[in-house]
Length: 94
Image (cartoon, rainbow, N blue to C red; front, side, top):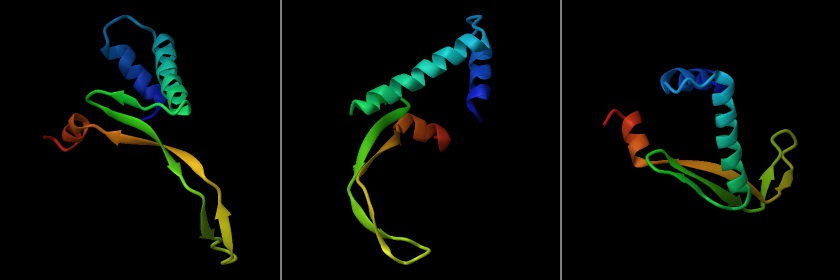
């Protein structure tokens, strides 16, 4: 499923008479809000769904698979998602 399919379903199932263009704007705003908060170092917790967090990855040494030479991988930040209990239970049909 992609964003366009999600927008179509939300537009149909909400019963609010919103157009797909309006729903797409809401979805875009939702995503950009999550991104902005994560960039600020904040967590985004959506009750019953899960939590978006940023994990810091330390600088490390790895190996180039082609040359077998060691390379330095710089420190970075990685966005992660932790599914909430209700979400996990729904996926597992509990």
